[in-house]
Length: 245
Ligand code: IPE
Ligand code: IPE
Ligand code: MG
Image 1 (cartoon, protein in one colour):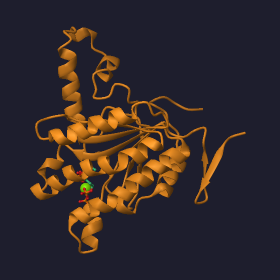
Image 2: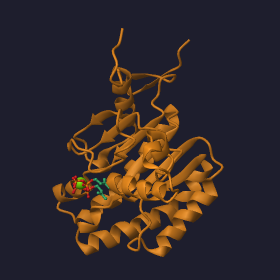
Image 3: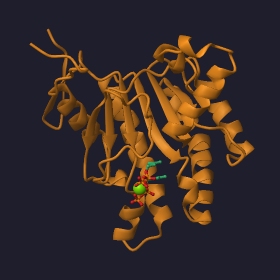
Image 4: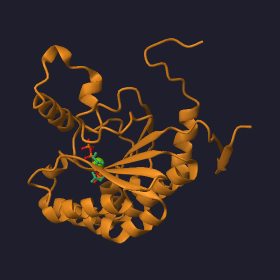
């Protein structure tokens, strides 16, 4: 008997849930602007949506959830917004790590650890990873100062340092030098706010993922959207370049 979950009239086959779901959490600024509020108010409201996404993933049995928190291009934003985003990410870790730990969530990070990321934040990231490292319910990865191209550049640098000869390089080898070699390919990518692009997110892992887009702005996103995305995912046919039936 197939195990089925019904969330808001959507029937999901719990035996065919995507293993890795990745979210581009977009639309915080527009959410705030629509209400005549400063952009940072939208980021603040995005925290609730983030917890909803985690709860949705836990309820449905998703193994890996990765969220795009700050891109290598987001440094171009006004200094006040950048400063806020750095502080806010640190603040979320401080306030939420115990709660996530109790829920069995393993917190992980991907991104470039360059001079622009304050040491204080790196320390918090290490603490959260350490606290939750034995948890197994959900591998929750925060992509911070992350860029898909930067990741491939960094992987190539790391690979070259091994002294490998160019003829020997293959895809598996490159995967082993990415920020998190254990991270599986993305099965389902969700992007909110009506934008239809990857914006440099997980380029390597997105090669054959299914994409799901919604006009909902990130602060309005909740677990029912996770369910809808997974429902649609289960009605797609993945061919990986081959043929079916
Ligand atoms: C996503 O919301 C959050 C980050 C990129 C950090 P935005 O801030 O991009 O919101 P919009 O796209 O301007 O509405
Ligand atoms: C992508 O959103 C980055 C994050 C969600 C962290 P952006 O809002 O930065 O992407 P663009 O600029 O619309 O492509
Ligand atoms: Mg945006």
